[in-house]
Every structure is written in C-alpha cells, then in structure tokens.
Length: 410
Image (cartoon, rainbow, N blue to C red; front, top):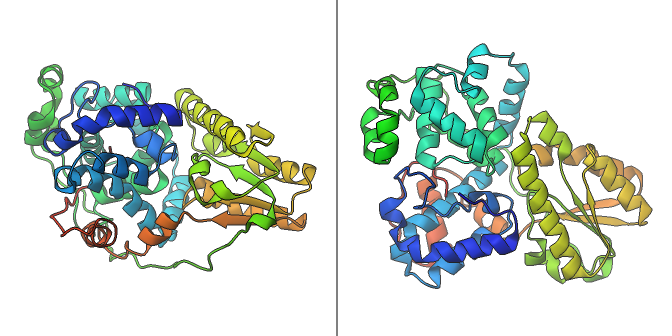
C-alpha cells in the first residue's frame, strides 16, 4: 500500500485510480490485502494535499456521473462530517472532555498490544498500527466489536483510531464512532455480523481469521442513553476578507496543504511559515510513522509555497506552534497573519489563544474560508441523505439517487 505524502504523488495516484473508479460501486466493500478496490487517497484528501473538488472533477472528466456516483458520494461523506460538526462544535468538546476524564484501561492497552483475545480484531489492530490505514468495512467491524461486544467506551476507540490513522479526521472519525454507538443517528446502532464478514473478507483473510468469527455470530447492541438530535449551535459568522494590498504573512498548517490552490493563491505575501502542530501530536499521542508522514506532507507544502510565492519560507517544528507563529510575525514586522480556516478539531482549539497573543502584539489573525466549504456547510442541517440531495442539486445538477446511510472512507 502507498499513501502519498506529496501533492505530486497524490495526483499521480489519483490518475492511476481513475480507470478503476467505474468499478468502485461493485468492489468497494470487499476487504482485500493491499485494498486495490479503493483509491487509498483519504490521507491526502484529509490534509488537502489534493482537494475534494479536484478528485471529483478528475473522475468526472473520464466517467459519466451515474457510473461513479457512489465514489463521489464517499468523497462528500467527509465534507458532510466536517460541515455537520462545524455547526455543532460542542459535540467535539464533549468528546474531548470525556477523554480527559477517562483513566487508563487495561482492556484498551491489551487490544492495542494485539492481545484482544480475538484473531480478527488483532489482525485489524496490526494493520492499523503498521500501515496507518484500515478499509472502511474493517473500521466499522472493529468499532462495532469495541462498543457492542467488548463494551468499551466509544470515545476510547475513537481516540485509538485518531492516534494511528493517517487520515484520522476530528469530524469523520469522531462522528463515525458516534454513529456505530447509536448516538449520531439516535437509537440506530451498527452491529458487525459474521455473515457480513464472510461476504466481504477476501478468501485468504477469511481462512486465516476463521477462528475469530464466532464472536460476530449473534451481536447484541450496547444501547446508549436516550438522546435526541444534536441541535445546531453555531452558524457562519461574518466572512473575513483580505485584499491584495493588505500584505502580511501566510501561515500554512496541516489541515490544508494546497494553499496555492486556494483563494489565497493570488495574494502577495512577504513571508510564509509552515508549522507542525507538534503539541497536538503529543497530546493525542501520535506514533512515529504518523508523525513522519505528516512531516513529509508539510515539507512538500513548504517547497510548493516557496515556488509559488517566491519568498522565504520557514518550516517550524517547535512544540508550541503558537509561540513560533508569534515570533515569526514579530520578526517580520507583520500586521496580518493570514491562513485557511481549520475546522473543528485540535488546531481550531488553539486559535483563541493564538489570536489573543497576536492581538496583544498588534497583529491581526485573518482566517479565510474556501468558497466550496462555505457553500457546502449550509447543506448539513440534518442527515446525510438530505445533504447529498442538496449537493447533487447545487453542484452536479443531476436527479437524486439513493444514498447509503453508512459512513464510508476512500
């Protein structure tokens, strides 16, 4: 398996996948070694080495919409989760607070050491830890076992995934685990059934994992406390603007690494800073391979920024990235620090403190939204099916087709 950590490599892998996109609807659910039936671009899209729009446009240049609708739909699952959570940030806060209050768990530690007592689960743990990836079906089976069979807190499972997955996204990861646990769609849980594993596991995997299938024979849901629909508590505020005459410095972060392919591309900057959110990596205990992958992606963004803006570009890996940004802004006598807005998650959590420290130095932090994010966010008022209908109507001008109710990953 290969998970590209540069924009050029991600675009090359996209081009290799495009001929297969028409077969995605047929093959996507099958869990095979190496996962040849899916694009394996989720980590590149998660950090926006390439954007959702680019991926969809490239596929539609070759295939008619009806042939690749399922693939496009899965691309937009991520945007749905991001948009949904951006309007309900308290859901992230509750998850984060619950994690903080959890003590160490011997059961969780055993699972992470591949000592779960189930060969199927240990197999998926090994793949996750060694590659930073799991097929979506495996993610759902694993999460269902964790919540409904092992009866462990879903938040601990979400944290385990977020720690290891290269495509670990605060929105899609957290909300997918909530969905399995019966919280995202109140009262609707996801159960992993033996018949489903037998249908979609590759024969060679099925043979080697057969001893663990009994645990999925008769799953019983661990029903959550009754909860209603999550209300919207935040809508878009004033849109921040930035003109060519404003100057200032550009800050690039790991939530959006294709800045030269954004509304900021046309603006002139006197200096560019690329930062690694190392304190977040430490707080969420990212393993070495994940840190290496993100660092490589950040280096690639740094090189592309220097080529695009033709100014000195600095790459900073100090633990306190807020201090690094403040020092850089002062050193370059900046009046503005401009960046693409990170959505709900660890980096967004750090913005109030950063904004305050910059303001104390007379420096303004300007957060710019991609127009496509603003356009889509308003569609995530309810469930995915309604969201997908609006996306099709506004972006693809095509009649609505049935949408799977199960969250997916590329």
